Image (cartoon, rainbow, N blue to C red; front, top):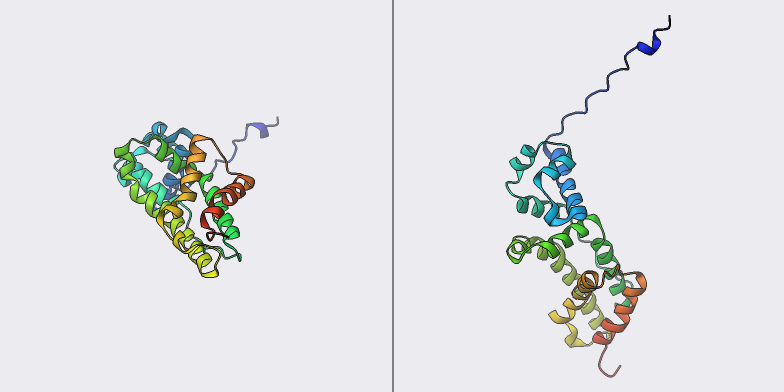
Length: 207
């Protein structure tokens, strides 16, 4: 009698229990995933724990509140600062920066960040002000400032363009059109914004 079909399959080795930085990374990744799919209002500590395949006690031990967890996940997930592009002209440098910003906006951390900005009430957003400003707004403004100051030095840009209103124009426009018009910022959209808004704003008067 053939008993081979009754032979028990070899037991699968149990997956090793994750600890420390490995478990923390899984929890933070699950938090970003939840934010980018169900949003701030749909995110729960239990859902994050399930996504990370751990118990909710492991989440609460590290982050006592949803706000603390999300702030840490955003800090860990936001892209690191890259060198400012230097492609020989203000227009090309601005386009490169905008493409980089567009890619960040539509990454998983970008969707997560926008869920926080769009869904949180003013008191909750205040909790994330430092994360948003230090991790997103200030780095982009600093890169725009460097591009524009370089353009001033080359004579491409008027000298009084070195001011906060000019630096705010690109991030403000990208966020507004993304939220209010559902723009996904194709390369053509970015070129139209740079050519129709930024270059006229930056040019030397009379040029």
